[in-house]
Amino acid sequence: MSTFPVPTGTRRTFLKTSALAAGTLAAPAISRAAASEKIRVAVIGTGGQGKAHIRSWLSHDNVELAAICDVDANRLAEAAASAGNARPFEDLRTILDDPDIDAVSIATPDHWHTPAALLALDAGKHVYVEKPCSHNVREGRMLVEAAKRTGLVVQHGTQTRSSEGHQHAVQMLREGIIGDVLVARAWDVQFRGPIGKTSPGEPPAGFNYDQWVGPAPMQPFRSNCHHYTWHWWYNFGTGDAGNDGVHELDIARWGLGVDTQPSRVTAVGGKYVHDDDQQFPDTMTAIFEYPGDGQVGNRRQLIYEMRLWSTNYPENVDNGVEFLGTKGRMFLSKRGKFSLYGPRNARLDQKPEGSLAASVAAHQANFLDAIRGNGKPVADAKTAHLSASLAHLGNVATRIGGSFEFDPASESTPDAAAARLLGREYRDGHWAAL
Image (cartoon, rainbow, N blue to C red; front, top):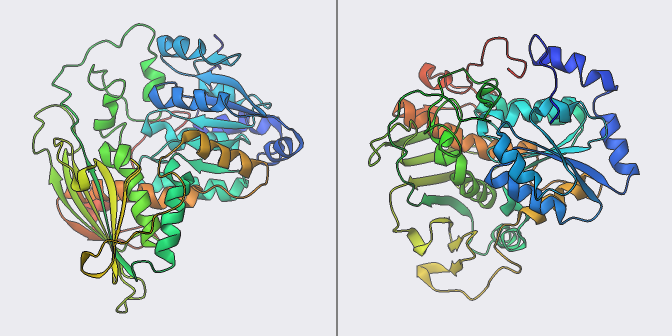
């Protein structure tokens, strides 16, 4: 196993000593991808979704899975056994320093998504980053700006955007199948068990906890803030709104036809059921208002419901989105369900063409096409940021226990409590701190 020597200083220092040493930032990756039939990809993070990335990359023609990376030696060894000839590394900087790698596929915990993506873009590599693309609103804006600055391709892991069925369903909405779509209602209702209560302890053997924490503030290792359970801790995750709910939030925003940040956010929720260590709520109802120009007919509303203690679902499905228009209602789900109604709940027979299922491989194919100059990514940095922001803003409103005004242009709020949560603190002096 090869590792990169730890440089002193911050992310800027690392970029100057590593990525810039290879030459210009964006140009090498763009020209190399255009000239070569084969795109060389590295996967950073080999947990559950990282393994899905590995399997899917191996299924594509003209793609070489060149490297994989994880700070857990056991996970890395397990992934390496099914990753073909990909070289295993513990430190992502080894991959970023390799000028022959064209793209990285980031499937780390949430707190590493934007730092790793920014480092990769500045090292001249295209980025496929898992959802949510950011840990907070500020990071999402930084990703948008970096994608624009470098000219490299960014694809977000909201893979339903590559579903032909969802694409056609949204086209039906645009064509007025239910009139003017004024309200979207998204839900994430499922049972996620408690994580218990623990005390600080020692990380397991083979797990590089210091590198796993990375630019986040250091805190003692706890066994219920480890693989997957990190989702429920403020330092590392974004709760289930950012974990699973972001898929539904993205579909809801897509179908609603809004392409800005909301102007007002309201939420209530908290820990209603699970008496454990997790910090994020198990229950949340958030409402986002998009006023448009303020005129009647141009305002939009998006509602998000999350209950992590129930197996009783709207429309008999755990994850779904309902669109309410002036002439009807549409329901669709990534689980493959769809229904359409006209005025007074009259059932309509029209259905979208293509599968409603989400596919990592199809989403990766769109990413590869964009790298080769054949179209654009369907979940680019801006799309990613606007949808991930809804998860972040909903979490913020729940934490402060109320609502706040939000300026879509400046991505700021006059509410001091909410403003403090739009970004985050980083570990002092860490090389990946933003």
